[in-house]
Picture 1 (cartoon, rainbow over the protein chains, first blue to last red):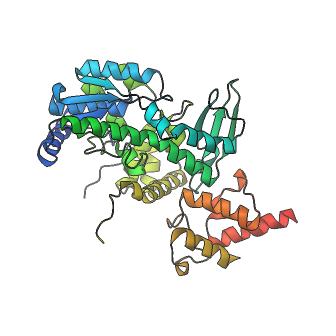
Picture 2: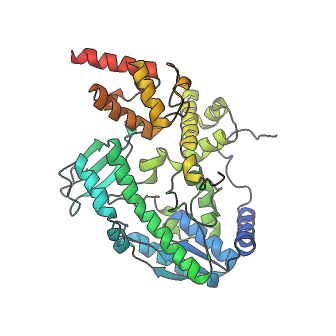
Picture 3: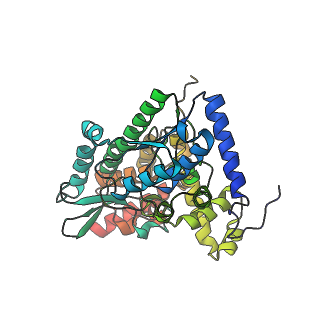
Length: 326
Length: 80
């Protein structure tokens, strides 16, 4: 098969409008014919992925057949709602707000998470302090899988970070995942009440590197941007008329109390670079070709390739449906 | 000690111990992932009293059964 020479421009979409048209047409077909639903529900956060997904859904089904649901909880950032409303207004859809803090309290999401944080940093006071999970930079060039740290930002602005032992790490993640799973439940409520499909918002990296919660944000009927690189999502955003404030916003996880970028929590590199490296790896370009194209050391690209391979392999579980062929 | 570590890895991952040779790269081969690493750190602490520092978390120390064994021996020698 012909492979174009690897350059920094290689993932730039040749025909943005054509890509939009093709996704819209498939989405219409999938939801209308395969799933036999008459519209779509999209959870909107004011982030770029959900905004592009919503704009595509509006093109596919019409604004009258799309419902936007804002799903904040007590740790959500304040500007999410404002941006989500601006988006809904721009595309003329019905939008509702469902605050899931009560449901999360019912699941003891916050209490379970904070209990695990306190076992590692006893001074942590969830009423006053903020917390997040990070992978320290010193591990970025390691060939081992990453280990996670909890960082507490105390009320007075001082910080303390500690490496998370296995049990505490697992408990914090499991508790936090109530957020995405509660959102999924609420989206399905509205979808079923209207005979709509749930339109999922993960992009290609989230799907393939496993940056989603199984049966949480990974629980949806279709994922129209699931095959797009992040920089391609931005290309679509501009063409679809997504508000500039949303395009300019740094992608965050919006999961923990302290502000945290997706790069810091999971991807470990800027998305523009990740897109190019993932493309090279996925399409069988030699590390040398990619290194030349990006002015990087071959060893560095080889390390990233290894890391991608490991991530894809170890997150297969998340992409698997239940195994029932016994 | 190598057998003990092999057994631990095999039991933690439902892997046939025969597959895990002393020089098998347990992370590269996908036998262990990041949860496996955390599990291993925990195991070294409870079983051998070895506290792995951040600076110890390298492939040279954790990449295979023989490297883990050598790491434990080095750590124990420092304590003595």
